[in-house]
Length: 431
Image: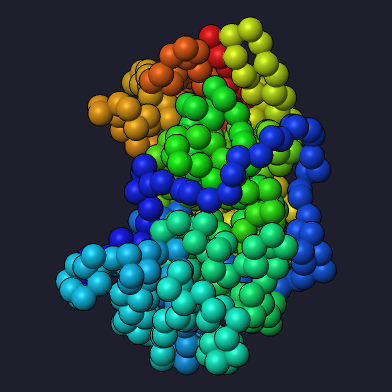
């Protein structure tokens, strides 16, 4: 059966009207104003999208954290289109709606060892179910939850109450289960909705760097938008972005962070998970699972300024965590996986000159993960201390400069390649 849990590159997000925003410096970590004392004992498993059906480590980790053989997993797919908007709703081989995707994921979790997995019937066809006592009872019987992909705006409109941005009964029940020790997992929009304040709603990197950030949802999918009230607020120690390397979203991620006063972004990569223990507490720690890893963009020392040529951001630090690495959010520290050792740079081949560092959708010859690949090539080089890459678009053209600095390092499991990167400096300048 085909499944389409993730939004397309040019998916249209529609919703709130654009509002004017005066950009001011914000706190290092934005508080969740709706749940200021909430301190969950559970965990999160957040996937950057395109989660393969055969990603055994991630699926088994979710099942394990939900109780192993006794796991009961509730599947929420309100980010998908409802059956009423799916022309193939009656065709089990072609359907791609919320109910169809919910049943698909439920069967998948049972295949990976869960005792039971059920679709939680909340979507745009069943908005009233978000405040149904019967559905709350169903949620209360679960030991873990999985949010599928699609469009995070649909999660906002189905599980949160409009203007006040307060929890529906079903979301309040999921939040209570997380606080009590349950696992909450999600992929693509289902991971993005875990965001605290200033959740990204759309946008491509080049227009983001050129034009900046605006609150709201927009018909133009290239325009960088964000929701100031955020998503569900399950993870608040940094902004979240998904499909990061595959869609070249590092540029939009740092622009959103700089414009909204955040000093950290978790750049989730496809088919890989950021596993978060004790989210929102002083014991918040993270582990990475999967082949593509997770980036951490550190803006504590970054400085933004506007010149006649355009917007510039200097002093960002870039860390890339790969499979098995651990990260302490409170201490901003990395512990590479035990099988890795510090890389002694020995490469002599030229670092590739990248002319599409953010994988522009307008460049048919572009390749994904150009930002990460340039950083890794630099880290493995015996002599080079800096490398530059540029945007595909011009007017202005942005140059990204990567630099090895004191304190930066790379770690390897094979002795040659740089799998884990710690503390590379990244500057973005317009010219």
